[in-house]
Image (cartoon, rainbow, N blue to C red; front, side):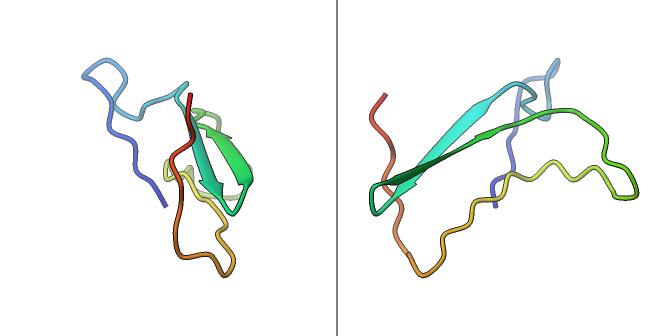
Amino acid sequence: MIDLEGTVSNRDGIGAHVLMETEGVVQRRVQSGGMHSFAQNHQRIHFGLGNHADIIPPVL
């Protein structure tokens, strides 16, 4: 899980794109400000790593 921390005007990092790579698989998450029906609006970004313990920062 990743908690984004933005500036004063965008404290939740809305609009940020986060990339994560493990074992050649790249996952992408976009921080949105949308509301969810019947749930709390949790701002943490989640990545599923499975059995992988190490992540590799992607080259941009």
